[in-house]
Length: 111
Image (cartoon, rainbow, N blue to C red):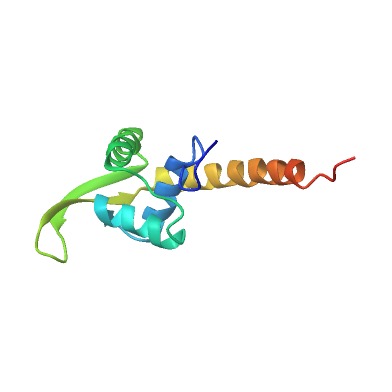
């Protein structure tokens, strides 16, 4: 049985793209934003986050640049690209279609 903080398989890319569409962030800030926005229901470990960010960067959906954080530490900041915005729109549409279908099944009345 899944735990409430487990991410639905295949949704991490969508969630990361959406968070980075709001503003450029470094990895730790991405983790904290996801946790905060989801009311602490969704969490992602470093072991999942950084490989996912690396994959998104390889796909050209995000770009990365080393900058200083608010705490004067050096960190890689990730920014959504135009290609990433198009992917976000596509993945959002797919998610809406899938979640609607799941909702229809879950809300069926029992016979």
